[in-house]
Length: 371
Image 1 (cartoon, one colour):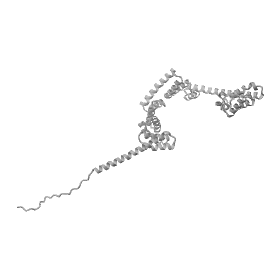
Image 2 (cartoon, rainbow, N blue to C red):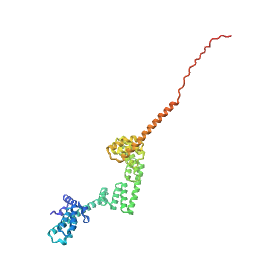
Image 3 (cartoon, helix red, strand yellow):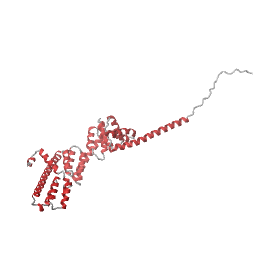
Image 4 (cartoon, helix red, strand yellow):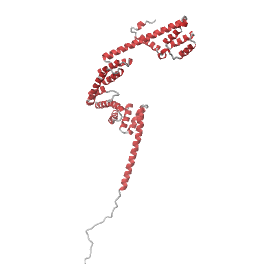
């Protein structure tokens, strides 16, 4: 028999084996709750035993089927129900001992798993609370997602890392979990004040300080997200980072497609960077639509869809561009016809002058006779 005490002293490989056995034992956990199992063999044996509840063979068959399904607690329950009638039967006693033994082992493995999870949680909480480790906070939240104290600790860690926008998001989550908590409300108020200062620096300063302030204040879903992403694009463009600036403008355009200054920046930067990725092509087409240049939008939208045929927005925009392009073409044709008609009308109104015969004059008078 394996000595479990040796496993607990740090044999990582053996611990992995234990967890593997536990995983196998719990594979049908959803099948075994509240004494119910859905395996075909179990259902068949259960129906047979219900028809003949005093039949030892049928009871043992059901117990075996349950243990095959790793439903050890259910198997013990089924056997114990027949203990009064079959308690002296050697085969029955052997089956019951085996089922109880398997149930104890299952409980032991579950205990090991719970202990390991508790140790992981404790370690994550220590790093989150004491060291401000944001990643450790996230790990703790995966184990206890509805714990407001962990959400607060993550907010504190983010604030320490000078990420107030994300900290604000975490504090608000904590307040949802603990409504009316005055301490959390104070943290939210202080963080909002800090974020407003960053917004002011972002919009009024220049260079790297302004860019850092914008990035620290950026909060997805906030009312000022569009303005911040547009400002980040402007600052990165000024810092000669055209591709990064294009990404920022694209993000802003996705939030508010009718801004022509952002659309013009996308067209300009997609030209200068020469980017032909799906995002850049689709955004260029969309920006050209915003600028009222549907004919030009057709090519990038078609190119984007050739690279990624399942872009729903690009499909809709291509259809819009084709419709508008037809309207534009019709307008051009009508304008040309109007111009030609006007030219003909002007030509018909101008009458050519009729040439008159020239009269010649001379100073020489004809010779006459005088009286």
